[in-house]
Every structure is written in structure tokens, then in C-alpha cells.
Image 1 (cartoon, each protein chain N blue to C red):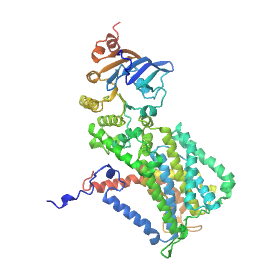
Image 2: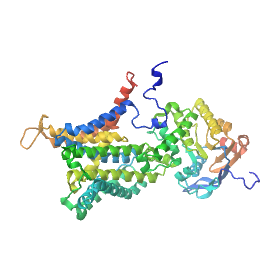
Image 3: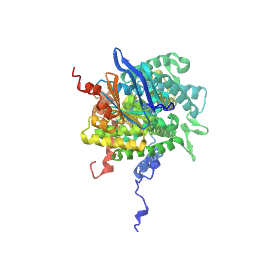
Length: 369
Length: 261
């Protein structure tokens, strides 16, 4: 009798429960282990505040980007109003976490609920309009928001902004000065763990959503809304639902942003912020969860890299009076624009598609397909 | 149809009239479809066949008349509400969700039979997971019935035309419908593909006993498969009966070949 006969092939699927697992193959489980190790070890290995701060901002952005990708990538609803919900979350953290002094779960929850309610109010507008018209309507949101943020000073502190004293603490665990086994970690290290753990949670929630009934319905609406209705999908209910979820995620990102930065002003929530999120999900990959995270890392990390190494890039001016034909800021803006053009022309499905191609190549190696 | 008072057809269409502005698409159309029956609707171009389907599944609201499914009215309900009552439909020019795999398309057919909402879906705990597994198993029965095994993970947009038509039939069957509306199931197919589809339709009938209404231009298919045939012309019923009766009806011949006068 063959010795190996008792052991099934490592990719054997023995039931639908196996088939529906997120981490099905040994390689994917290995990848997960690598990610967890990087998550745990990175703040200890890389202790520089600069890099940790870049990664924290990227993580916060990733949470918002996952929300926008659910709305735009999965449900096909283009929104330019993402900045509005992010702002709402930040001010919510300032008031609930700062003024009321409630602990982190509460101000995160409050931000999510506030974002969700606002999204639920905006959602019904999507029932009658779609595509570019929806983009224009949600664009209006940014400008209405701008007015509210600048004038409703009790909530927002007006033009001059407001401090956000929302502490990143749950009971005795304070992420701004973590102490584990006698070792104290810096604020940036603590926030890195906090933010990226939340990225994982939000990504998991989003992934679960898109692989179950409501998420499939969203994709059906994106691909063919009339056919979706004919098979019994309540289109309106699902469009509003995804607006609620997406805005809640945006608000959570905003709350974390405020809490980390400790100060926010209306100058942050411009149309450019919304556009940046759209760029992130396009560069990362529309209709993929991990693409949102990759996009946030890429779009967040690239300017930081250029900033950091502007002195060593030839022709880049590092400061006033130094030589060079271009400032780091201008170079960033140019590269940002160039990236959008290049991605839309050459890889409209984003970094996620590149990754999937690489994976497919190695899965089927030595065959080409 | 019978003198028995308790007799009630599955679907009853009474005096349905649908107008678009000055154009009358359907004019006082009445007929009934029995349980398990394969009912064909034919007629020249512009006769109102697709309009009739649109009324049946709630896409259009007829100005007059009523449509009853198992005694309950369908008229005035939204397409989603009609689908929830068990009316499935395929589209003339494919209504698949092209970025989703065949399995996901079929799972969407199960949508009306599932309950998971946003919260439960995101949590993937307990019922959401059990429901996914149970309905995935049900979808597999349809995949087997229609021989879609090689295409489970293929995005619907990449399927060959004939297979895509079959996948769409599969999605409708996954709904476990009481009534299946097929809008030109063999349109654009060659003889071999048409025969394949006919074989699948026969098999589906035998397996599920579902009542079907088929709109089709392929007369051989209609006359071979249908129990009864309804002939529409300019929105008016000109004949309804068995294929033999309809074929010999002078009004039908006139509508198709043009009047000699």
C-alpha cells in the first residue's frame, strides 16, 4: 500500500466549507503568516518616526479606500463626496473622544454610526441617478461640507480648526504609550499596531461582505442593474446599504486621522482629498479589497519617498536657494498625475491585477497559462 | 378551459393592454398557463412578445387588465417583488453579470431564497456561512443539470455565446421559479447549438416540472417542444392552441406570410 495514499493532496477540497475558506492553500496561509509577522515586527525593526508615520497615514487611508472601493469598485456608484464623510468622522472623534472623553471603542463607534447615518441620508439620491450625475451630486456634498465645517464652529472650531484629543486608549491599554512586558513603545509604534490591526478588521468585514449575498447583489447592480432587479435584488435597498457601509468606513478613517494628527482644520477636506481616494482605488485596483490597501500604500508611500530622497535625486531642489530645476513638491504633483495617466492607460485594473498575473504565472509554472 | 370551478391555472393573464404614447403594444391579451406547461409565444417582429414579458415580470405596467400568479396579482409590483414570488426570466441579449463567475451568477439566482443582510454578511458568522454553504450546494445541482462544470470559475463575460445562454438559464433555474420566462433562448445559435439547448430545455422540464413561457422565432423548436402556442400580431392574440391547431390556422398563416388580398 502506498504510504502517501492516506494523505490527500494539499489542495483537495472536501466540501463547500473548504471551498469558501479565505486562506485555502498552504501558500496563502504562508503569505498570511508573513503579513502577520511583518505587522508585529515592523515597528520594532523600523523605529524611525518618519517611516512609521508614513505607514500610519497609509493605513488610515487604506480604511477609507476600502470603503470607497465597496461603493465605487463593487457597487459601481461613483462618489466624489468621500472627503465629507472623512471630515464627519474626524469631528466626531474630536467631540466624542476629546470633549466627552470617552474611550477609543466609543469614539470609533460614534464616528462609524455618524458616517453611516449621513451616508444613509445621501444614499437615496443614488436611486434615481448614476454615473457622472451621481459624481456631480456627491461633489456638491464636499462644498456643503466645506460651508458647514467653516461656519458651525461649535462642532468644528471653524476656520482655525479644532484640536482632537481622542485618546487611543482602551481601559489600561494606551496605544500612544504601549507598555508590554516592561518595554515601553513610542506613540508611532503604538499607532502603527492600532491602525493596521483596524485595517485588517475592516478588510475582513469588507471581504466577507463581497463574498456573501449582499455583496454579490452589489456587483450584480454594477454589472447589469435591470437584470439584478429581475432576479429579485432590491436595488434601492442595496445601494443605500453600501452607501451606509462605505461612509461608516470613511468616518472611521477620519476619526483615526484626527486622533493621530491631534488637530484638524477644514482645509483638509477638499475635493482633492476625494480625488486622491479615487486615484488610490484606481491605482490599487477597482473591485478588490487588497487593491485598496496596496493603492493606499503606493499613493501614500511614493510622495514620502520622493520627499525623503529629494536631496539625492538629481535636479530636485531640496530647499530655498539650493540648485535644481524642480521642487520635491512639484515633482510629486507631476508624478502623481503621470501615475494616474499611466495606470488608466496601461493597467486599468490596478496593482491588484499585476499581482494576480504574477500569482497566476507562478501557479501554472512551467506552463504559460 | 374546464367546467370545474376549483380549477385555476398557474398564470392567468386577463385583458392586458399596454400602450406607449399612441402605440398599443398589447391589446386585450388574455391567456392562461398551467402548472408544468411549456407555453410558447410567437409572432412577427414588433408583435408585442417582449412587451408581454416585460408586463409579466413587472418591468412594464399595463394600463388595463390583470396578471395573476397562483391567484395572487402580479400587476403593479416591482420586478424584484415579482421575482420574489417565483417568476424567473432570461434576456434576449444576455443579462449575465459579466465580471462575476458562473458560480456567483448562479448564487445570485438564489438571492431571493437567501436572507443574509449587510451586517450578517460582514460578520460571516453562523447563519451567513451556513446559508452560503447550503446554497452553494444547491447551485451545484444546476451546474450538473446544465453541464456547466468546466466554467464554474469563468467570468460570465468570457463565456462562449452558447454557454452564456445556458448559464443564464441556469441562473433562472437557481431561483427555483414557479414560472420561467425564456426570451429567445436560441437566438443567434446554429443548428447544433439550438439542438443542444432544446435538449437542455427538455431535461430541465423533466427534472423540475417548472412551467415555462418561451418567446422564440425558431419555429421548429417551438412546434417540437411547446404544449400550446400563443400567436400575437400587432399586440392582439390571433390564435392560441396546440402546435397543430396553430399551424393550420389561416390567420396565423396570413400574419406570417402576408395576406393574399
